[in-house]
Every structure is written in C-alpha cells, then in structure tokens.
Amino acid sequence: MASPRPAILLVDDEPHSLAAMKMALEDDFDILTAADAAEAQRLLEEEWVQVIFCDQRMPGRTGVDFLAEVRERWPETVRIIITGYTDPADMVAAINEAGIYQFLTKPWHPDQLLMAARNAARLFQLSRENERMALEMRFLGSTAESKLEKRRKALREGMGFETLLRAPQSPMNAVIAQARQFASFDVPVLLVGETGTGKAALARAMHYISLRSDRPFYQLNCSGLTDELIEMELFGARRGAVPGLANNKIGLAQKADRGTLFLNGVDGFSPRLQMALARLMEEGAFQPVGGAETITTNLRLIAGSHRDLRALVAEGQFRADLYYSLSLAELALPPLRARPGDVAILAQHFLFEAARAHGKPVHGLDAAALEFLENYDWPGNQRELENEVTRMLIFAQAPLLGAELISRHILQAPPSDSGADRSADAALTGEGSLKDRVELIEMRILRETLTRHRWNKSRAAAELGLSRVGLRAKLERYGITQPGRSLAEEEEED
Image (cartoon, rainbow, N blue to C red; front, side, top):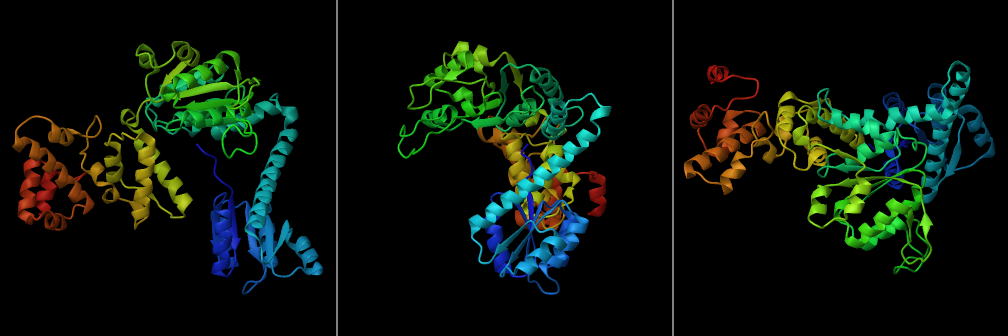
C-alpha cells in the first residue's frame, strides 16, 4: 500500500491565488485550502499538516500573527510566508515570533513554489527522524535492539503484513503465514494470482520484513509493455540506443542492487526476455540496451504471474529453467470471490481512502450496500472493488452510502453463499425453455430496480411500467423481499 503523501495547507483570502498554488503543488502533495486564519485553524485541528504556505496580508490578522499561534500549538509544522514585500525588520520579527522557515515573494514561479514545498516536506521528515533517533538514544541503555532492528520494526509496522487488510478467517491468512516464512530467507519468490489480487502489496510487505528492508524496493508491471520498453526499464539503455535518448538510462535491475525488485507479468515475456531474465537469475548479470559491457547486481527478485507458469512450461510457452529459478518459493493469491468477509473490510478501507483523497467526508457503507458488495464475484478483484467504491463516493449525497449507489450489474446479482449469481448470464447463452430463461432475467431486473429506488415500490413500478399491484404479485411470485424484512412484514405494509 502506498505511503500517504505529505499534506500542505494553503492559506490565502484570494481564491485565484489559492487555485494557482494548488495547481502547482497537487501532483506531489495532498492539498488543503483555507480562505482565512479561522478556517485554517479548524483544518489544523482535524488534519495532520506538514507544511503551511500563508499569505502575509489577510483580513483581520497578518500571516505572521497566525503562524506565531501555529508555532505554539503545532511546532513541528513547517511554516512559510508569502508576501509582496521584504522589509528586513519585518523578516527578522517574523523569524523570531513565528519561526518562519522561508519567505516567498510575489509573483512566485510554480517551480519555485514546488521546490520550497519539497524542501519543507523534507525538513519535516528529517525533523521527525531526528526526534525518533533522539528517543532511540535515550532508551538505548535499556534495550538490546540495534538501531537497524528498530528501523526494521518501524518498517514492518508501517509497510509490512499489517497493511494487508483481511477478515479473521480469511483465506489470505494462510498465504500471509507462508509469506512471512519466505520473507526472511533471501530466495526468489513467485506470486501467482489473477489481476488485482494484491501481488504488489504482498511483495512490498515481504521486502519490508526481509534482511534487505533497509535497501530500496522497486516494482515494474510488464503487462501490456513491449519487449523494447521492458528491456529499457529493467536493464537500462546507453545514450543513443533508441531515438530521443540523450543520456544513459539506469535500469531497475541496477537500481535494486542489494534491494528487492518485484517484476509483475512475467507470464507474458517473449523467449528473448525469458533468456535475459534467466541470465539475471543465474548469474546476477545483464547488459544495458545498446551497451556491450556486462553489469552485475545483487537483487532479490519477486516475480508475479497472472497465469499458471507450470502449465505454460508444459505447453512450451515458458522456459523450464526460468520457472524453476523463479519458483523456489511459490504463493497463490486467492481471488476476491474466494475471500468471504474480506470484501466489506476492503470496501470500507477503499472508501475512506478515496474520501480522504477527494476531500469528501463519509461515515461508511450501510448494511445493504455491504451485502451486495460481499455477494458479487469481482472478476477485476481489488482494483474493480476500489473503482466501484470510488464511483459510489462521487455520486453519494449523504455521509452513509447506500446500496442504491452501486452499479446496476452488481445490484442484479442476488445474495448467495458462494458469490454472485451468474444464472441470468447463463440464461442468455444456455439451454432451457424461453419462459424459465426470461424469469431468471426478470428476477434480477426487479431486485436491481427496487434497490436503486431504495425499495420505494411506487417509483419502481412506474419505471418498470407496472401497477403497484402487479409489482407486488411478481415479488410474491419470486419471493423477493427487502433485505432485513420478511414477506409477512411487507404484506402488512402494503
């Protein structure tokens, strides 16, 4: 799971100035904006802000006055003033009163603003690291842990297996237990699973509890890339090897030296790429594109495959020696449809992550929505689930998201102990009488329409061109009831 980006708070009473600053910084940072000091203070109380850019001249109070208060309450936050003038006396006063890190004068250039933001975020990170190291030194005499072990422990907690969300009885528990065993041994690992099952996250977690955790982790998703592009990204290239390459390009195999490289999509490698990868595995050696020299590297390779490599070897599509080199440790990640109970946990997590990223507060998903999400089979796995939850967030009008926001093809899959019911899909291409096949489709349309209208039968009947009595008859015929309610209760209401 990716680490959260640094949060920057922009304070300015001029909307166009706020918009310009946000545009310059939003690719690298999470941006919060405030039109005055009161709004900025409220955001500081709710959010973890690393850097503040504040305009000096604002109605009611100056930027220095506000930042002086920030210094008292949130001293670790890096404070930057944006001003149209640079009087030396004012600058000295600002430094003394508010601990200003930097002054930016108007008009500023976007690159200047971005550089100041990056430097300030780095300063914040170094300050936190210095504080952490100071605490380590204080307690060094009372613990036998080395500094390296403490760092590894922090990485395990922040980026290790604890970040892989799952239910207490999830099938992923067995996979993660095996991954923990493999992680501490410096051997190649092969992760097999459908697209979107979380192979990259598992590879990253294995790296951060391995002996290489203090070295870099890189990943490359090769699916859909050409041989030439994969070779350049993996092995690098010499200047002039391809049109437009003005400088030497260092490949990930070299960057990941003494670290870990996760290479996803190896099942799609051509014979030429398989040969180059086999050499990298056996000799730790490779040649950059357009280069004659041989470069060596000491990396740990974790490979990802969407298909069964053993079957591809049997079919002659994958080198047997490469498969055995990659699969000393092999883990199969289950698809989301085989992880009952995990969908609800992941959906809530994706929702809150999306809400934070888009600045739209929510309380969660209601029980009916979670039921529909749990009983869909998610052919696109976690990626599809994340996209669906984000789409629901976009259209949500209330903090608690209901089932009516879910896409229609998911709503049309009635609850089932074994995942979504695909019987109506089969009805379109399978066998059986026309009456039986039409009824299967009719049942799904009825349930989906009622859910979208929050079980308002009058509206659903109107959309379907039925009378309320006619709709009720069909519901009784198929035994369709609102989740959490019995047929008797609905008859009483009618």
